[in-house]
Picture 1: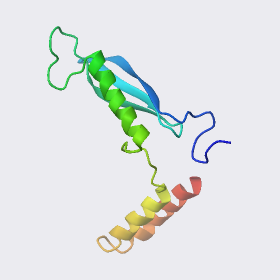
Picture 2 (picture 1 turned 45 degrees about the horizontal axis):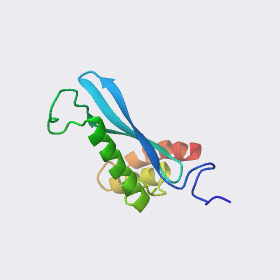
Picture 3 (picture 1 turned 60 degrees about the vertical axis):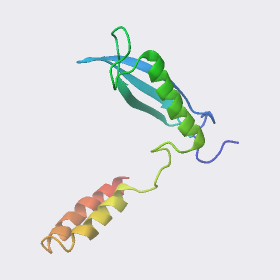
Picture 4 (picture 1 turned 90 degrees about the vertical axis):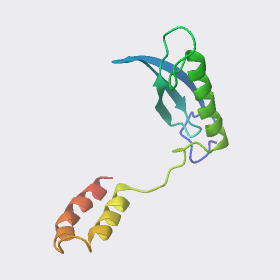
Length: 125
């Protein structure tokens, strides 16, 4: 039986790979990895260094991009990766908080006019 927070078929260990994509100003390395709960994430690592010699500051070779991915996966294994834990907040919560915050700063009729918009958005979720 799988854990309640994991998707069916999800591995317990994070895994990933480095992808080199062509861009307008040269190649760009991306990290594509899967978190322990099964979600897949694609994150930009940085520009690819295609010249000879030592890479310029902020540029990555295949090896340094893979080292960056390994650091990301290590943080995911430890549970310290940013964005790994979900907050549980919904759009309806955010809309209600927004209306509460602006109630004192704008025209008194404004929140009343905005309330139907937030009600329909939360009904769809």
